[in-house]
Image (cartoon, rainbow, N blue to C red):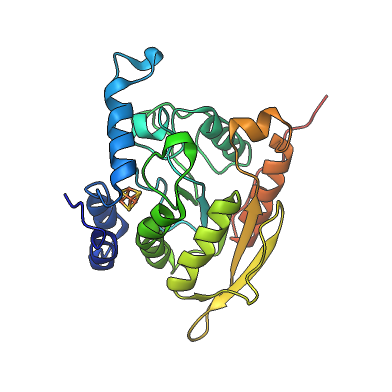
Length: 257
Ligand code: SF4
């Protein structure tokens, strides 16, 4: 276990596979505020989950290690992924994301309740630029930067198959572009601005290779959904477009009426 700020770049760099990286990641204690919060939340629990054991540690990415499509959110939710130990699993934001991936044929089921629910993602991996639950869902820029080596390494290890990235929210967009720039792609200058439906094309920094399409999408947070800023149809369209860019086949959207 490491409390040192130097731990993420050192440990991430030595991981040769995503499994190795995840094993090192869950030992990380580099952000004191987030370590306190994730553990306090895990001790105190929400009443509805009082009898459950919380994970209370950094949450690794979830999905195949040869995924052509990566979805990067913000950070684990205190009573969602911080409880279940699996990204986007156990909260409303994840419910919408997985239900939409299922409709598109990119997940084996529509519900995600915990790591033993049997859910499989098909060609898609979900992750976050900050791997520990932050108070008020707000990591600081310093915490984002401290955690970046993990996302950089994840993108680097996915690189042979990765063709598209969807970032959920402006925070994820900025963090992902910085990490992808460090993982071997050239980010256009000036750096593209986040917007829902915006698409940026990154080219390999060295040698030939396929470009990487990066898509912006409003975050699947409850607030965005309640206020109508993000509808399921909006989410479905961005995910379908990104899946096409990644070379994945998607199912026809459900018919209304
Ligand atoms: Fe480590 Fe990232 Fe968690 Fe900070 S947020 S303690 S860098 S895993």
